[in-house]
Image (tube, rainbow, N blue to C red; front, side, top):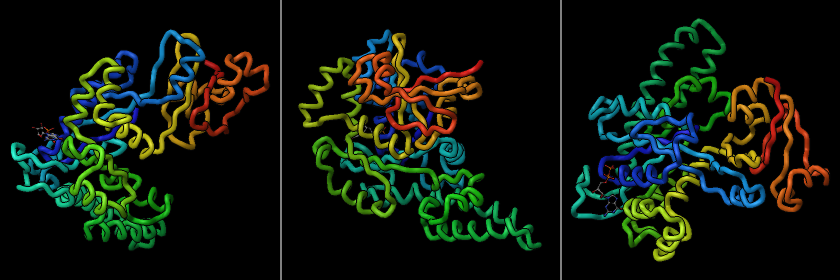
Length: 365
Ligand code: GDP
């Protein structure tokens, strides 16, 4: 499944947020493909449509789809030069699909700030710089590697060289690789093999004090202003409140607690939803009496690839997919009735799965 890496300076609230995530507890046994490590938290993705479907099908088991968060602690100033456990942590970031950057937006005399004062924009730049320096290293290495080929007239190497130079210039100017404007094709050719840290999709968490949870504060506003050109979302939450919410097991009690604070959903839920859309993920469903289940895929995937998320055999032996839209299921109530009404479509290998599709795959083993 997809992984988001949580990064940030020490003492900004990463562990507090991560603990809230981890006690959100998806039952690991149901998700055997998940990474089971102490620094990985598995959370289920809240989805109202799954509830609608459950009501209709009344299955024995309901399995929401999941997303994994990895706590990547230990990023400090100088990490790119090996400070702290620098290189190890940077290697961990390389493996995740997206980055969640937690930034301290709360004042607390009792919590030491590593840089001496609360300054979200300054903090963000420290982390950015470390990641950019590491990327600059990767880009320089590749530049050296292809420079010779480009000089003896290899057209492909020449083209890549030009694009790489754009990345180098941006990184040297203190900008992240994701800000470089080149076509998808050029991007793939030039940096597709580099897994640049600052090319990964990112979202920011402004960790604010309890009192600013609904409105944000001066710090979170400054952060928002600083990232407005990055097209990145800023999720405002209070990590300590989130960890209190996560400790409440009973969903009704949890709802009451949220209500008391004037919240309609937890910050964690907003974070999960934001991560989902950051990665351009969509959900399809499978629905049977044994199990109703949500599955995560990327927008644009065709039916066989989507089937492969369930099992590689489904992809390899794919014959066709039967597709029902949720509103039709709601109207006709049963699969048989939907079929009879002619509302179930039969799709082949080229079908692009849509968000919310209810899929039934036919395959050869
Ligand atoms: P990490 O080093 O980034 O993992 O930070 P921690 O989660 O360990 O938090 C560092 C300290 O800040 C701990 O003492 C937390 O209790 C405290 N802390 C975390 N979030 C908040 C918050 O929203 N408000 C306040 N006042 N303290 C917080």
